[in-house]
Amino acid sequence: MNFLSLRTVQTTVFQTLQNNVIRSAPESLNIIQARCYAARKGTRDRKKKAKVKVEIQKVGFIPHNQRNREQFLASRPKLKFDDSQMRDPVDDVFVCKYYKWVVYQFQEAVKAHKETHHPEMYNRPDTDLHVTVELNMEGEKKTRLLDNFTRTVAIPHRFDQGQIPSVAAFAKTPEIQKLAVDAGAQLVGGVDMIKKIQMGELNLNDFKYIVAHPEILPEMVVLRGLLKKRFPSPKSGSLDVNLGSAVEKFLYGIHYTAAKDEYEKDYGSVQTVIGSLNMDPKQLEENFAALIRDVYTMKPKRSGSFITRCLLWTPYSSEKLKVNHEVFIESDASSKQSTVDEDEEVEERVTL
Image 1 (cartoon, rainbow, N blue to C red):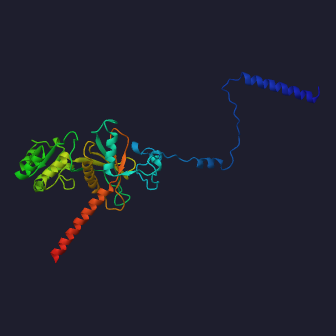
Image 2: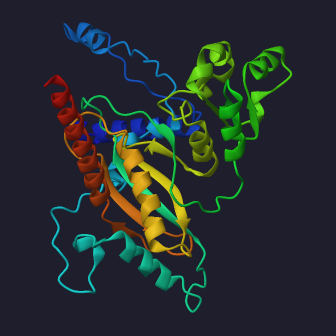
């Protein structure tokens, strides 16, 4: 037997023995390759430096309206409306999103709603007429925004608003107290009524609005902690020399709230009712003018518009009509300017 044949026999026998050992070994047996020499120089140091300690940052509670805010705002249509860059419609029929909104005069918009709510169509001729007043809530500084505000405005033409709120009136003299009673106040009194409230015999929480005459204000200071925000003040119109008019305003006026959007803080809106469709359009226009002028008194001292858009709508129709509100603001501003000019002329005559 030569050397080559012997080498072949040895290889065959070795492979046979190796295969038998592997087959008879348990499945959990792992063959690990081991090296008896050290790793390359600097390898361990480099791995240690690569192990950076992970610091767990504690995140406080995030309100639900702030979670994924950027992603939500990116997909949400903006509420601040500006169609100044769009084209004017050239026909009676057009796609609204590509053109400017048609601006109606107030009485034209009312007549349009009356036609759609006629008994032969929606059959809701006496439904309430709603108005949405959109506001730019930017303050004197861009970083500061206006707070939400709630006000009550007296209207020249009353309408049914459902339940009449309860009003308590304070005055010193019986003559002024009688004016409040004639106006419809549910509770009227003077210093004696203040003492009863202090002793707990009367509860002012049963009354939604509190009005007072300026003469009794020093005696009412003891009730400031009890009334808190409801304490009479000239700003809210609850402290007035003409107590009867103040009572009527809170009984039959329009109560509205200007609220900022939850996400777009510089956008605010007022939603309220100014009357019913069965009223005369001129009466509705006068109520609308009173509301717009009262809202405009809250404008901050800055340039730019405060009231951006006014929409008329009803609960039974999705149609919203944009009305021209600037005519009522301009007329109010011009009347105030004429009053100031007259006062200046009177002062000049007095000095002469």
